[in-house]
Structure formats: C-alpha cells, structure tokens
Length: 95
Image 1 (cartoon, rainbow, N blue to C red):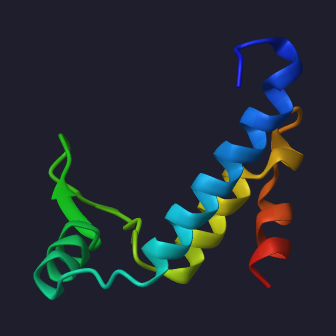
Image 2: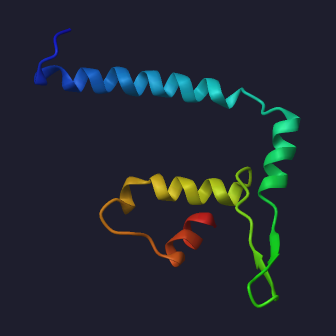
C-alpha cells in the first residue's frame, strides 16, 4: 500500500482495527493490588495548613472511580471539541 492520499481511508481502517484489538485486550488486564492501593492513597483527600494557619482541604480525583472514567470519556468525546461542556452536561452524562 502506497503513501498516497487516496490510501488514507485504508490507513484509518487499519489503525482503528489495531486500536480496537489493543483496547479489547486491555479489558482483560487486572491492575496489581499494590498499584491499586498506591493510587487510592495518592488520590485521597488532602488537608494542609495555608499561609494564615487555617486548614484547607483539597478533594481527591480518584483515577479508579466510575465517575472519573465518565468525566474523562466526556472530555475525550468529539461532541465537545468545538464547544466546551458544562457541569450540567457532565451530570447528564453521569446519570
């Protein structure tokens, strides 16, 4: 297959097929328990003392939660490429 513009469609088909096979194989991979514990520890809520000696807490972004996966899928969704999404749209996607 040559590198002509006329072959771009076929290159797209091959790339999509390869990506689909790769993603389907990733579904079967189980993350190690130690890694899961480390991610949960890293993504836990954090409280620090700010410059005024008041406690300030930061919410966590749990990489393993279903809610986070929905948000990341929405960010990668082509519907929002031209116009950003709102919190309302994210809530609608998560229900």
